[in-house]
Amino acid sequence: MTAPSSARIYRGTPRNLARLARLLRAGELVAVPTETVYGLAANALDARACARIFTAKGRPASDPLIVHIHSLAQLAEVAEPNAAALRLAAKFWPGALTLVLPKKAAVPGIVSAGLPSVAVRMPSHPLFRRLLKLAGVPLAAPSANPFGYVSPTSAAHVRAGLGKKIRHILDGGPCTIGLESTIVDLRHPRAPRLLRPGAVTQAQLERVLGRPVRPAGQAAAKPAAAQLAPGLLARHYSPRTPVVLHQKLSTTAARRGPVDEAWVFLAKPRTLTAKNIFWLDAQGRLPGVARRLFHVLRLLDGMKFTRLHVELAPGAGLATAINDRLRRAAAK
Image (cartoon, rainbow, N blue to C red):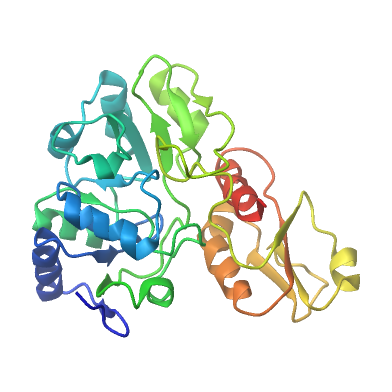
């Protein structure tokens, strides 16, 4: 099947949603909006359809997919939930939380990198939820971008990266969170592990579970071995331009630095204006920083700077997720 010169972007009309749902049931790929980042969706119970995701993205088979469900009733179709999982689902679903659980036989091995577990999420984006309901099947969907590159947070980002590899993109507007979901390993509910930080924080998880949630160990350097969940590689979410991280950016250093290097502050500098000075949120508020992070990295990657200097976020919570993405983007 030959892909078009540029994928079609669909508005979220009832007619378009019904058509896209039919295409998904027939094994086609559809890029979809979520509250986190845009995903590239296929019928999660169709191994051939899911294989097309890996081909379109250039994604290694060792990196599993997240299965998206519309209702809690669907959870038992794809995974074996436990009391801890149901507690978190009651609090955070629909939302930006992915749970890793033992998988059911209905989920093809290609979805889980051949492992006996599966990552599951119930998204909150209203347009994606309508599509999930109409499709009537769970949808596997990693980020809708070439593997390893900066995640897309708009339909335009998807078309720029995968427009010649896929046919259909559902436009749901800019992503409201802008970072991938939090991933928690609950295969052993008495020893939960935080595999990937996100908008749902470690502290929030611990309050609901009533026990510590320990962070996962060192990131995998290479995508050779099967990963338990996506987003665990040391280098990921990476622009082509080298990224240098700073605990705190200095306006003096930015003023004196080379003009072919970009300087990205968390908040808008009060006294510094130049064509190579950028910021993520006018006031430096972390939700705004997270929402614009990938957009700004993509923007600067197309401006032919030789290096991107980026300021790390202070504190914990959402700052942990922001810094996780930045450290993977800057990894060699």
